[in-house]
Image 1 (tube, rainbow, N blue to C red):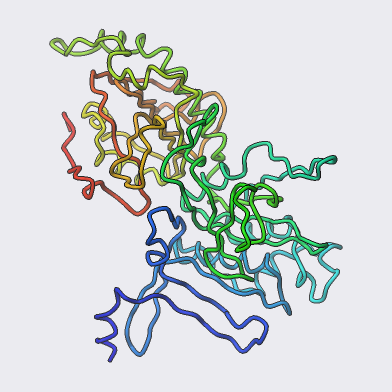
Image 2: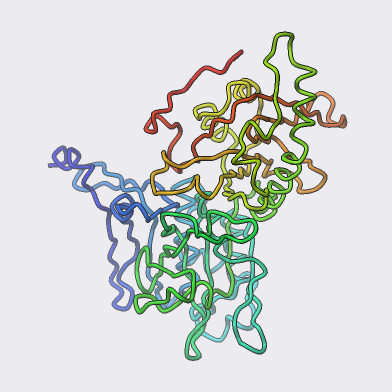
Length: 455
C-alpha cells in the first residue's frame, strides 16, 4: 500500500491535524499551493515543503501552514506568529517554537495590557509582544504603522501599505498584518502569504509606479476563517466574503526579516530609483569613458537615446519598479541564464555577492502586459547589498540600463581604499525576463544558457 501511495504522490493535496479541542479543532493544516494557484491571477509567494509519512509512504506537500487559535492559551496573534515561524523552520531551518514557547517569548517581560486576561496574553498581544516573539525566532521585525486621522477617523499611511507588503511577499517573506477591531472588539492579526494581481498595469500610474499597483487582493491565512482568504487592497473592492480591507482597516504591517538584512525594501527602492535617474542623465558621459578605455577595434558607441528610444524617451519617474530581496548567489545564477548582454555577463561572472541583495527591476508599463512571465520584459535593474549601509553609496553593487552596465568593485586586501567603478557599454538594448519565484533559469521561456563572451 505504501508504494501505491507514493506512486500517486503528485496528487497529494495536503493534510490536517485534528486535536480534541471543540472550539479550535485544527492544530495544523497545509494545502498544496499549486492547486490553490491554478488561476494565473493568483500568486502564492511563501511556500515551503512539508514532508509527512502516511501508512509507510513518504509524501510532501508544498504550501503555507494554518492553525486555529486555542483561546485557552493564545489569540490570533500567537497563531499568526506560529504560522510564520513554522514557515521559516520548514523553508530555512529556523527554530521550532511551540505555542507555549511563543507565549513565553512574547510575554517576557509581561506588561499591564496583556494581563487583562488569564493566562496573560490569551485575549490579545500588542505589537510589542509580537516583535519580542519574532526576535526569539531569530528574525528582525520591521514595523510600519498607520496614523488615525482625528477628523475623518480614517487610517493614514506615509506610504501605501500594499507597496510595503507586496515588496516583501515578492521576496518570499510572509507579512503579519494587524487589522482594527469592529464593534468594540480587539484587533485581529493575519499573515499575508500571496497576492491576486490584475493582468495589466493601471492606465494612470502616477509618479514612481510599481508592480504593487496591479495587486487587487492579498491572500492571507486567517486562523478564524481559513487559508488563503482574499483581503481586498482598496476599499472599493470590499465584499461580503471578507470583513476587512487593507486600505480602511490595516493598523500595522510587520515584516520578519532575516537577521543579516540591514536595509529595508522601501529604502532599497528609493536608492535604486535615484541611481537609475542619475545614470540615465549621465549615460552618454559614461559611454564616452567606456569607448576611450575599450580595446582597439571595438564597435563605435552611438548616442544612448538611439540604443533604446522607448526607455530613454520617458521620464525615469514613469518607469515601473519591482523590488525584491534574494540571495546573492541566486541573483547571479538567474542573471547569467537570462538575456542580458554578453559583456555584462562576462563582468558579472567574476563578481562576488553578499548573502542577501536587493534587486530592483525597471520596465515600461507596456512591458508588463499579460500573466505569462515569458511575455513580460525588464529593461534595467539595480543590485544593492542588503547587508550593508544605506549611506554614501556603500551598498551599490551593480547597475544596468539599456546600453550600459556599471559595477562597483572592492579590494578586500585594502579595505580602507575607495571603491572602484567599472563599466561596460554596448549598442545592445535587448530586454530580458523578470525573476519568477521558484525558477532558477528561463528554459521554459526558450532562453538557453549562453556562455558569456570572455567567460
